[in-house]
Amino acid sequence: MATRRPVQYLLNRICRERSVRNFNAVPEGKTSSATQNLINLEYDCSAHNYHPLPIVFSKAKGSAIQDPEGNKYLDFLSAYSAVNQGHCHPKIMQALMEQAQRLTLSSRAFYNDMFPVYAERITRMFGYEMVLPMNTGAEGVETALKLARKWGYLKKTIPKDEAIIVSCCGCFHGRTLAVISMSCDNEATRGFWPLLHGQLKVDFGDKVALEKIFREKGEKIAGFLFEPIQGEAGVIVPPDGYLKAVRDLCSKYNVLMIADEIQSGLGRSGKLLACDWEEVRPDVVILGKALGGGVLPVSAVLADKDVMLCIQPGEHGSTFGGNPLASAVAIASLDVIRDEQLVERSAQLGEDLRHQLLNVQQRFPKFIKEVRGKGLFNAVVLNSKALSPVSAYDICLKLKERGILAKPTHDSIIRLTPPLSISSDEIQEGSKALQDVLEHDLPKIQKQKPQPDSHTASNVCDRCGRNLYASS
Image (cartoon, rainbow, N blue to C red):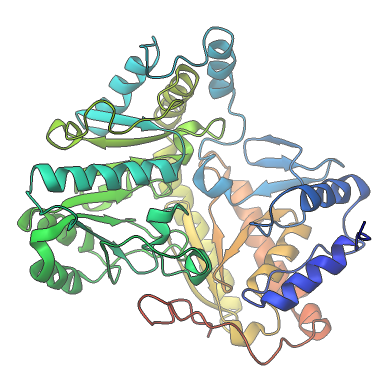
């Protein structure tokens, strides 16, 4: 039997060999035994498809996180918007416990007494005629893609096998095979070929390019799938007027406007839906993450009957989609967003956070290139050359040591997306921690950390040939 090598050695080796992104190994001597043992156990027994920060969540309430040793942190990631209402919200937990003792699953082979109530609630709240329930966000996206294709063949009379879905460069809609076929992230696509055909790309925020592709291929385009604010790409907000232009173009060329609001919706951007910033109504809306209140995976596809009823019994489904436990949790999650005015809180606190971050940028213009976002959906874009050899991941490690939990995306961007229930004082703690890291920690780690290898992995997209996330 082969001798097991220390986790630190293995992690360092993987980081050296991959050199795709500068993720650090678990720091030696900086985590306690209980935390380290759990990290080691996960490393030994779980697939290595994530690079977590070296912290173990043990308890959580609101914006506060506690590790096994009792150390406390503030959550500035919110499980990628899945806990907009805050961790373990009492009203959502109460709904979970009450329903769990009564009925958890019927499957859609039978009716249950919670899903119809949830279906009426969510369609009324968002102004659509019908909902198709699923579980994860990726399932919601897959559902919307199938729905668009079926509508394209039935209603738009696109010839068989020729339906096209248009999506945006830099998009992120999940990691299923259909979705990675749209991806500009080489890590998501390489080694998983062949990719699904019938996909076309267009620059996000470019209405001229969108009209060009509609004009050239419009007769075969079933849907345009996009994020109103691109999350994984680095919280990219489109130019003013773009969403209205998308609506007008989709109407003109008879293309379904499909808004992926899984991360940007449910108050995250300071509006109930990010599309509300320009008062546009998509033909199809995909929701997830915060719909489950951080308790259960719940997703939904919303559309009117003309679109939704293109799918008939037996053509799509999910054993757990619309289950009574998830329905009860989703109702409570929506009620909390409404009753606690989390949309309005997100708008106001988001302005406060960006103001504070801009003040940090003014103090450190060499290191911070840009602060951007809407509501509590924000990002700090770092200058990689000025930071070198320090990475955004290193900055997040130092933030963690100062009690703030955030995660980088694409090497040089840090997302700051706390729960919408966070307090003003906690917001200030987050921005103060970033300032302290840049002022006190950065000079030290720049001296201590060795320079990276001269050859770095290319970010040039295999599909479109551009370097979307170039370091600068």
